Length: 245
Image (tube, rainbow, N blue to C red):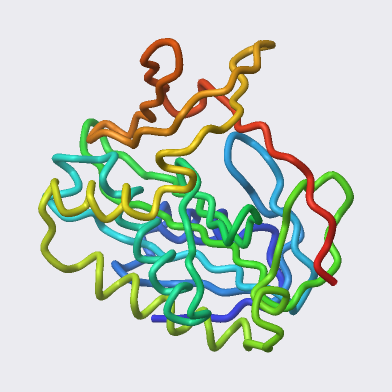
C-alpha cells in the first residue's frame, strides 16, 4: 500500500505511529509533498522545500536473516536505494557510511531507519528516505547538497519516483540474502573506499584511508595505525561546495 500525505511533520513519525497502533502492514509506505519537521541521523533535521523532493517512509517486517544479522539490514537498504538511483540517473551513486547517498562529493539524499522492538524481538523497521529531486537552492550551512535535477538537468516527478522506489524496496528486501553478498554489495559502493578522507573524533581531526565496513556495521580505516569505528563515534569532515546552479 502506498499513501500520499499532503503535509506532515515527519513521514517516519507518521509511519511509526501506524506501527504502534497496529495499523501498519509489511510494505506499507507513506509519501509526502511537504514535510515540515523531517528527521536526519543523530538528531539532525532534514530540510526539504515543499513539492520538490522525494520524502518517503516504508514499513518493513525484517526477515529472519536480518533479525540474525541486524547491521546488514541497513546495508541492504542503502544498496537498494543507491542502485535504484544509479539506474535512474545512469551515474555512479555511492553510500557514505553509514547511509548517505552521494554523487561525486555531493549529498543527494539520506536514509534514516527507526526500529520497533517487543521485548527482545525486532518486529518492525521504518525506513525513512529523503532524496533531493528538483530543488536547486538549499539552506545555508549544508556543505555539499545536490539534486537529481542538478546532476542530469532533467526533471523527475517526486511522487512517481517514490512509487518506483517503494516497489523496488519491498521486492528486494523480501528476497533471499547471503552475508557475504550483502557485505560485498555494500562495500563495492562505499564512498571513498581505498581513498584518504578527513574524519573527526571528539576535537581531533585526522586523515585516514577507508578500508571497508564489517558484518557488525563498523567502519575500518588505516593510517599510521588500523582503526575501527562504531556508528556515531566519528564524523566526516566535509569540504563545502558551491552550488551547481
